Image (cartoon, rainbow, N blue to C red; front, side, top):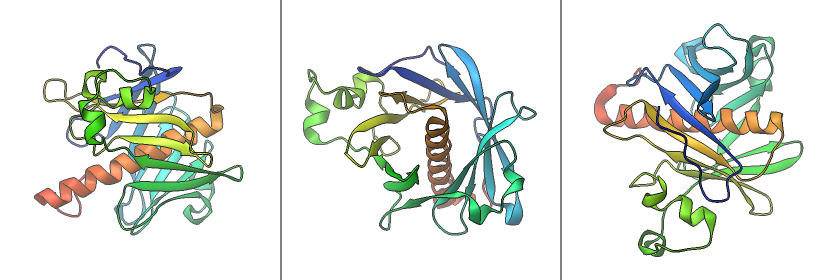
Length: 219
């Protein structure tokens, strides 16, 4: 994976990569160039994907998990035993509207959103700006050229807490993306937001593969 970058104003960056380029069956999450977490894909009931965040690959202890709902949205749970609770008891992360551009969830009675970040014309042309979020999403700061898979995490006060930057590139296919956190969220909320954005990205990836002719069962 590439050397870790960090957006202006970020206090922590997780770099996400994979050796399974086509299926992304297992993701490695690095901090300060060291692997600290893995996101491993499983298939449960009705071949619905489930992603488990572990501390040591496929055999490591589970910290959190994500599962698709049957039609839209995902569910997230924290804990070491995803099979201990029925999926209906997991926390909902639901899209708002008819697109996958904005997902909302509640954690400790606080609302949060992973919201798609699309550059405006001004942001694309501006080279010298103060706002760290805008700088993060200029191409010279590492954002993808289209920005369609870039997201920002906001709370009920519209504060930007983190950004997910899609980092897939032709010449470095192992790189998937990175997450820049601008505030400390605490261990549990951070894990929840990580599981949620990985689930959102997996949903988008599968939809694009299906639309390209991969079929409903495409990994």
